[in-house]
Length: 267
Image (cartoon, rainbow, N blue to C red; front, top):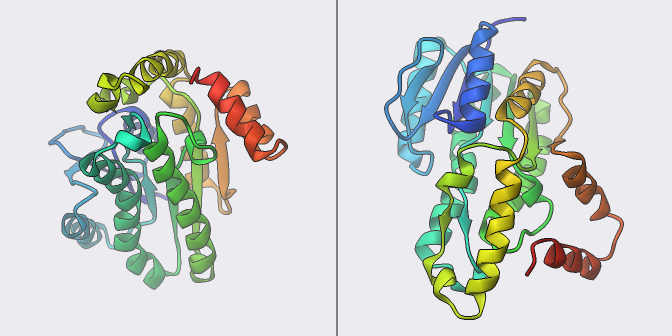
């Protein structure tokens, strides 16, 4: 396959690190963006905070200066905040939406002028099963992924005429560092109403994540999407139960889906 110039955000761990390693092993030039300094002989790491538009623009411009183009962008950077929607602080909301959604927007806007000029390119956005249904006590995480769903669908229509393909991956539970790095709302934990319910739900969430699929499973799917000429817009990668839940949502009523989620998450 022709060597591609690829940018992957959130490449220091989990999905991003596994995907970067697989693509580099196939001979592609892979730039891994992350917030800390890293070195890897196969992946070219660059320090970048995806929330900072100026920093993002400068990093992308340097990569284009070095390589002449960007063929593929994988918007993987993300984080999670657990807690009750009612009690989320402005700072928590900004961090959640800024990292997951605006990070995706910032990188996409930075690479698109170069892709449009070249009349080719591919953008792969990391959504989630949580972007297909609102997950209790992960509400703003779901909101950020719902936003990516809408952004990706609209962007795919806007840029296809320029030879640019846009798609997304919707992972279920995976055993990555995401669980350990989740920030949990102290206000929710301390609240007499929400606290006990949140702790019960959180125990289930962490159990499912820790027993989830390995990140290499998702990395292999992303590699296939990179190699496909016309990748599907949506790509759910999850265990059978979670995959079925995405199907069930389109069959049952809204109230029934809320009841299913309430029972499943023990809230």
